[in-house]
Image (cartoon, rainbow, N blue to C red; front, side, top):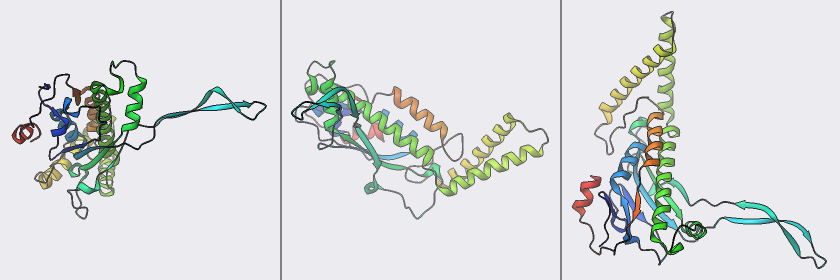
Length: 276
């Protein structure tokens, strides 16, 4: 029987209303021995403003390659290759918005803190396999389930971090940017009007205004599908972005079990208790 830590579920059954895994693993990889930390993943998704995450993959992607520099030719026209050259690095994954799973009405304006992202992490299976082959720390090489779980853990954590940080900081709409600018201008004007402006006092004004604006928007959007994301600052949620970067670097999301695979599918109740 495969045994995972609490909160981990076999990746085959880790599909919930928040996550979906559709990875075309090579036939020598045992996905039933790869577990996903659904509690940890859900926590990172909530911090990053990600409503739904789909982890997919492609098996026809390019791999990292090295093209040596030609330094000369022999008498028959054959090229001599030098030790130097150009290395073209292919990433293990890419991310993009998942338009197929949108659950928000684009015609209805919402403050940035009430908008949530549906996204995809698309794995380059060929590149992942090539990187595992080049590593010498796996006894079974590219056939090692532990190696695939290790790389998948790095990819999912980095992918969630990239998607979330981009959404929290650069995904702000024009209206929210305008309200944010108005808040800073008003805070600055009020501070100057005191006759004794200071950075500390200015910071307190901005924090107080951010609290008030967040509270107003929270009242109007607390019962939406995903709810409202609280932040110290109104507008770009830099504090949540920083928190996401730190936690995604410290939270393991994927692990492998070396036990025999458990054939029984986890019950829906057990999944709901984790991701609810």
